[in-house]
Amino acid sequence: MADVVTVPQVRPVQPALRFLRVIPGVLLLAAVGYAGKLLEQNVGAYAKAHHWTFPNIEYVLWAIVLGLVISNTVGVPEIFRTGVATYEFWLKAGIVLLGARFLLGDILKLGGVSLVLVAIEIVGSLAFMTFLGRLFKLKPKLTTLLAVGSAVCGVSAIIATKGAIEADDEDSSFSIAAILALGALALFTFPVIGHFLHLSDRAYGLWAGLGVDNTAEATAAGALYSDAAGKLAVLVKSTRNAMIGFVVLGYAIYWAGKGQAQSVGNKAAFLWQKFPKFVLGFLVISVLATYHFFNKDQVGALANLSRWAFLLTFAGVGLRTNFGEMRKQGLRPFAVGAIGEVVIAGFTLALVYGAAKIFGW
Amino acid sequence: MSAEVEAKKTGSLWKLSLDTWAVLLAFLLALLVRTGVFKHIPW
Image (cartoon, rainbow over all chains, first blue to last red; front, top):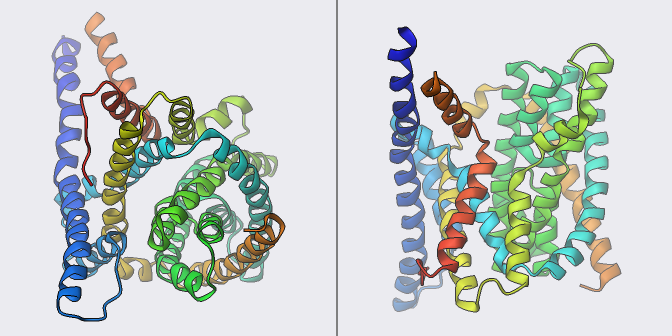
C-alpha cells in the first residue's frame, strides 16, 4: 500500500523541483553576464565619444568582476546558489558547441603538440607538488589532492580523487579552496604577464591551457587575451581533462596498495566513469563540422551559442568566488598551492617557449 | 510494480552525470540549428 502512495509522489515532483530550484540562479548568471556584455559595449563607446583614453575591457572581465563584487559584498542569497552552481554545466555545453569552430586536422595537429606538453606538465606538477607537500608536512592525502588539482583539472579532479582514495571532506575543502583562490589570481595575472612578454595568441593560449587549473578559469584567462587564445586554451585544457582518469586510477591503486582505500575492480569501467564526456562531445561536433554537416551560417550560430554558454560561466566564476570563505580554510595548504602554482606557471611558460622555438610560432 | 520500475528508471535517467547532460543539451542545440529551427543566433 505504501508503495502505491509513494511512487506517484516521487516520480513527477523531484525532477521538476530540482529544475525549478536552478531557475533563479541561472537567471542571475544571465543577468550578470549580460550586464557584462552591455558594459563592454557602452563603456567603450562612452569613453570614445568623450575622447577618453580607456582600455577596451572585454565582457569576460566585466562579468567576472561584477560577479566578484556581488559575491564579496552583499553575497549570493541562498535561493540563487543552486542555479549559480550550474556554471560548470554551461561551461561544458559551451565547450562541446565550440567544437564547431575546430577542424579535425587542427585538433590532431594542436592536440598532438599539446598532448606531449600536457604529459610533461602533469608528471612535473605531480612530482613538484608531492615534494612541496612533504616539505610543508601536509597530510599525505591532502598532498595528493593538491597535486592532482594542480596537475590535471582543478576542482573536478579533486572531487574524483577524493572518492577514489577515500580522503577526508576537510582535506578536499582545503584543496578546492586553494585551487579556486589561485585560479582567481591566475585570471588577472596571466593576461598581464602574457601582454608583458608579447606572447602570440597561440603561445598564450597554450600557456593558459597548461598553467591555469580549473577549466572555467582557463577558458576565461584565454578569452581575456584574445578569441584565438581562448579557443586554444580550451583545446589544451580539454586535453589535460582527458588525462584525469589515468591520474586518479594511478592514485587509487597507490592508496589501495597502502591499505588506505578500496581496490579498483574493473579498471576500464573506472577510466570510463572518470573520463570527461564533454571532451567526446567536443570531438563529435568537430568531426561533424569538418565533414560539412553544418553550413557556414550554422557554424556561426553554434559559435554564438557557445559564447552565450560561456557568458553564464564567466558570471558564475565571479559569483562563486568568495575570498572571505577561502581565508577561513587556513594558510598552509594555500601557501603550498601558491608556491606550487607559481613554479608550475614558470615551468609551463618555459615549455611553451620551447615549443614555440621548435615549431616557429 | 510496473510504476515502481518506471520510477526507478526515471530516477536513473536523472542520475546521468553533469557532463553527459551538458553534452546532450549541446547536441540538441546543434540539431536544432542544423534543422533550421534556430536560424540565426545573435551575439
